[in-house]
Amino acid sequence: MPPMIQLREAVFGLEDQAITGPINLTVEPGEKILLDGPSGAGKTSLLRGILGFLPLIGGAYLYEGVATNKHTIWALRQVTSYITQELAVGSGPVHAWLRECLPAHTDIHEADLAKFHLSASILENSLADLSRGERQRLAMVAGRLRNPKLYLLDEVTSALNAELRRGVIRHFSEVEATVIVVSHDDDWRRESVFRQHKISVS
Amino acid sequence: MKGAPDLSWQGMAMGFILLALPLLLTWRLRLGLGKDIVIGVGRMTVQLVLAGLYLGYLFRWNLPWLNLTWLGVMILAASGSVLHHSELRWSAFIGPALAALGLATLVIVLYLNAFVVQLDDLFEARYLIVLGGMLLGNCLSANIIAASSYYKSIAEQQSLYEWRLGNGASQSQALRPFLRESLTAALRPGVAAMMTMGLVSLPGMMTGQMLGGSDPGVAIKYQIVIMLAILTCTSASISLFLFFSSRICFDPLGNLKTKRVLKNPSR
Image 1 (spheres, rainbow over the protein chains, first blue to last red):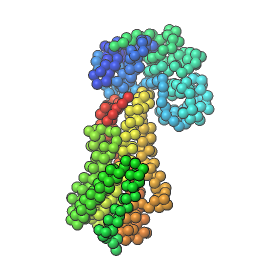
Image 2: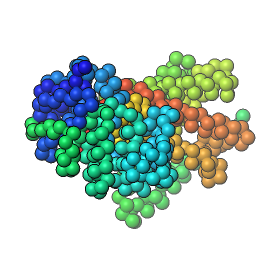
Image 3: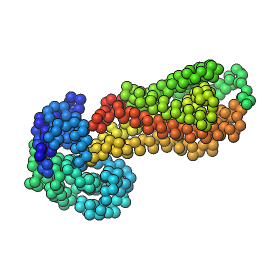
Image 4: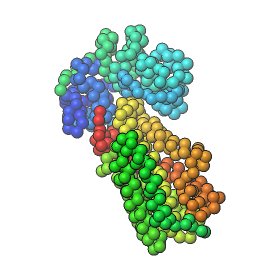
């Protein structure tokens, strides 16, 4: 089985302007990676590059052994849950939002919400009234319900208290899917399942 | 049908005397609008005189190809105006604007002429040009609002858009909230105007028709139909405009080509 993601001297950027340095990274299916490196090293940009939001302008990027093109990028997005720090989810009721971002006929059970310490009553709330932490956890509920093969997590524990944070980290250390994490929280480092990969400044 | 009596030169002069009050006001209160008022009134007068001249000829000759060409010129001017007043780049949008406004206006005018007014000559100047102009004029601002707000909010809320794509949404699914938001913003004023029509305001077309000697009963029928046509033309032209332009504005990976799309891509 080929590695899920392979970057060889990969540079992501916009209009020939490099935004990440050359990156070498191989991610096996099911592997858990914690991206390390100073802020500004391009960790978030690397996640956006993997998703095709930043074009590859140098080096090679392979997905499941195939050099990426528009088909592989759209296919990768299909199986990914990308969860970001500051989720501008918009307004309106929570249940309507969840419906819209999940595949049709996905059932939402109380247990799915409880997994991230949310109660079922939150479904009736308005998105605008949620705290940052609640939004982050809601995004994780939505992400998990999609049953992805790949999680790309960008500072997803930044608005959570220590207990919730540890719960979330434990959850992602146990999932079957591949997980790539960007985080400043040391708690991720303490979870030995995560292989730390250093990203240096370009 | 007896028309409105022609206005004499003295009559027109008396009309212009009305200008004295706004001019006096701007002078006394130092609004600094004097120059603009004079230029505005001047332009309006000259443009309408010209419109009167060419419409006179168009109506007299009434050649289908010329009428259609003239409608084309109006569509071109309308497309240019949409882009000029928006933050969208001319080069990316002129094609889609022309195609969208052209298609929507033409189809709806011909529909009106064929099935509503039931003309024998579908290309008759009096209907093709007047109704076409009416539709264009009324869906312009909605198109400006819709297209600008659509592309601007995608650029501004790039993280939301990327988040949706990064969670398996197709491009059209990821764009749906933006589409919904901009269509609502664009259609709302027109719908609001219909709510008070006939109560607060007497629409210009109906007023003109009645001054021209039409029976109020006939005038309101035209007005009702034109309001329906405007709403349809607005929805259709916006949808087509966004649809045609999306082919140019996004790359194959679904990313917005911000620099190609917006005049001032800040952030």
